[in-house]
Amino acid sequence: MGQEAGAGIYDALHESVESDGGARARAIYAPLFRAMLGLVAASGATSVLEVGCGSGLFAELLLRDAAIAYRGFDFSPAGVALARARVKRGEFFVGNALSAESYRGEYGCIVCAEVLEHIHDDLDAVALWPSGTAFVCSVPNFDYPTHVRHFRSEKEVRERYGAALDIHSVRRIAASGFAGRSVRESVQRLIWARAEPRKLLGLLGVNAFEWNAGWFVFAGRCR
Image (cartoon, rainbow, N blue to C red; front, side):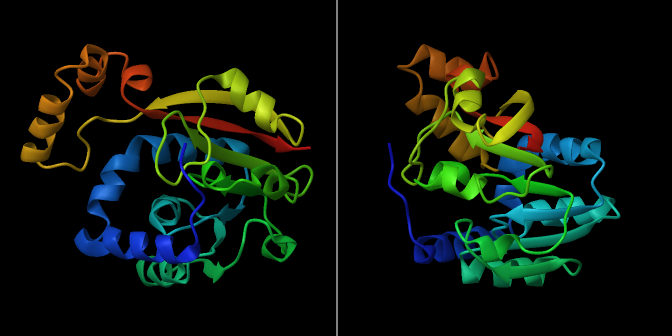
């Protein structure tokens, strides 16, 4: 299990993502973002607050096709600056998921992608979400240096967040084994995985969620 990281780590991360204009990150997160976009639309919300907007990659997709009011915050000043430069609509501000101040204003849906697994006090953050508000969230099924937890089943997701959130659905979204990677990098991944048959098959798309990586996407209403 990893460790919680400070804003400076994410400042550097967001700036490194911009080395190719975010192309690699877009490719990696494409299946996750597609699923979340569909759930935001299904919620019927006309306004969104994104918790942990990062450099604006999800907001870019959301506002490209949807006539929706958007606000997003992140505790990384560099991420917020990049989001403002990337997305010309909406409002971005520096905020903290554990501060009630960040949740002021009116919005119909909270989006929280790739955030809860990074903070120890995730339940305190979720407890701040206004009752009755729709939500669309994701958590991973894999470990990472900045993941303080990950999940192995839908049951674990419901057990963790069910007291604060009325979870209507939990979906499994498999990650691509080669998205955003060059041919050379893809070949290297296959070579490194050759001694682990399940990992190798997962990279090739066989039972990819279990044997490679993926996300649980869950949606519903705040209690």
